[in-house]
Amino acid sequence: MGAHPVAFPFVLAVVSAFYGLFKWHDAPNPVPVWWNINAHPIYYLPKWFGFTLLPVLMVVIPYILHIFAYYDLRIKKFSGEHKHAVAHLISLPALFLFVLQNFILLDAFVSQSGDISPRFLVANVALWLLIWPGFIFPHVLPNSTIGILTPWTVRSEQSWTKTHRHAAWILEIIGLALLISAFFVPTGVPLLVVTLVLWLGPHLYLVIYSLIVYERGETSREITEPFVVTEA
Image (cartoon, rainbow, N blue to C red; front, side, top):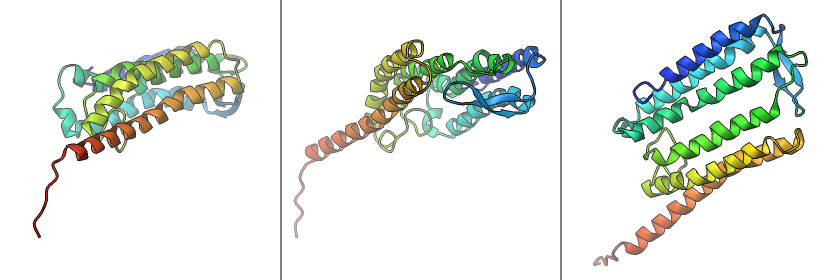
């Protein structure tokens, strides 16, 4: 995966396309593509669109990330686990979309009600957008493309390193909390609120944390710099 980070997403897209063929004749036309807060369908589009959109995005999104990473001079110097960590993060959107397409959306397409499973959707968010990134982030060296990109992490190696290490346990713990909540919190508004707070909250916190680390580093640097007296 490290040498060809788009190869794995391509395989996922192909598998999704073939699996969709088996579900094609069981799905009505059109199929639901948007649901209300109670997981009931409210908006429909042609069947071909519903079956092909996410498999296409499984390739397109990682490919765009790969292009940006390819032209990042610092990433080009990565090797070993650091290169593989970047490849895993590039493939991450495809993994999320793969589970979403094949285990959530296709079931909704072929069901009589068209309802989506909010609990499995939230569990998918917890696993691939919180827990797994938390495991990968500490292995990503400073760069300008892949990782927790804030104005301070891209300017300070110290801010980058501490923020990504801090993100490891923050995202994993909160991701686990969201994963458990997905199966116990009542669906509807309560589950939506819990999901938004536990998903977006850590990212906002890490942005603030990166600023704090950066400011402390700047303050320490100013204190340790020698005082130079210039003659008039």
